[in-house]
Length: 236
Image (cartoon, rainbow, N blue to C red; front, side):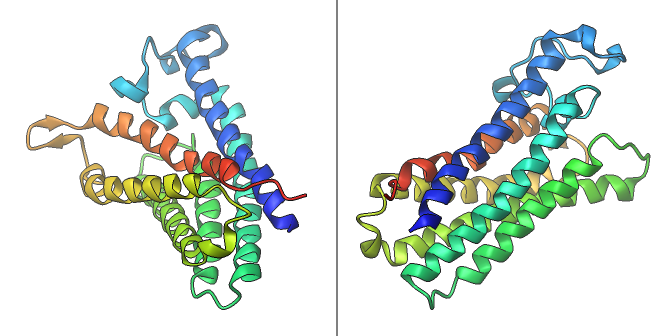
């Protein structure tokens, strides 16, 4: 089935493109300070996956970082839409009456649209509380739509996994289930906390926690697509 090969081939790029783009922005803003016309934008010596020294948007929105970030996210959004369309077609091939196939498509495409909107407005500054809330809501919707689409997809594949034995490596399907379950648990616990205005939570400074969580959660979300690449067997 050609759609399987297509999903396998594009899924690895959904991992590689944002991973390279985000980390390129991090390296650029922490190591190549001369490229930044506004020296207030530069960041010194941080590894935010652990220390939470900067958010992803903080590394990506200054010029010239956004020249890397925005095109990469636009391309990722486009590939995401293709990914979810192909997955719907795969589900229809094995289980045409699957009850989740439309939900997978809608939430998957919605996540890509939310990512595009977030990228468009990244770096555009308005000193307005409503605009700041809008940006937070868009980012939150991207996460929710993405995880819901991933969860429905894994659930659907499990529902007819006996039909997939010669097409997939079941070990990686199990890893996808563990990954999505972990992402859901972390989201349920952390979203109410990180959505709070300000950085104070009963005397605890959430700023660095929020930043580190953002970077690590980002890796978790895109790792889903890397697992997709290893899960599907190449169909000749």
